[in-house]
Length: 188
Image (tube, rainbow, N blue to C red; front, side, top):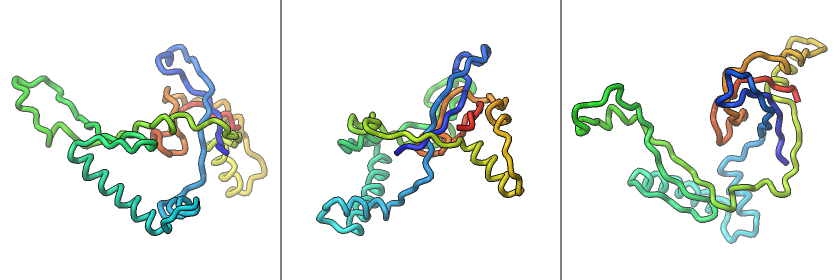
């Protein structure tokens, strides 16, 4: 089951018009570490114990980093494709000669990109969705409980004025962007 909340956000490219849409955001309070994941894999009739599965997963990560640093794209079949992109600072001014480009100065790092396979592109078939309170509404309730208050005013959350962001992201911080976009939580 996928828990989700809903929130109003400004539409990208229509910020000046104040056009908003309602978006759903996945919320997950569940976490599974590599040990638990290895145990789960092993419980599916695997011939290998959970410690062997965990060891293979850890070794796979080390080997992926090694090969990605060597410039390889890694296709893991049903898991998808992994490759790197460069994080550029960019030049403020065009140099006289492109040979003056210095990767130590102008490249600030690498991102690992994951391209989902067809098997992982749309996993929503047969999933149940459960509407839960938004993170802002949850926070308001927790604050009220800590302050020994008996009521919570959700109008301030529903009618909030923080519209600083225009793109929906993943408020739970998992897999998507790390920032919660501005907008009006609907308190749902």
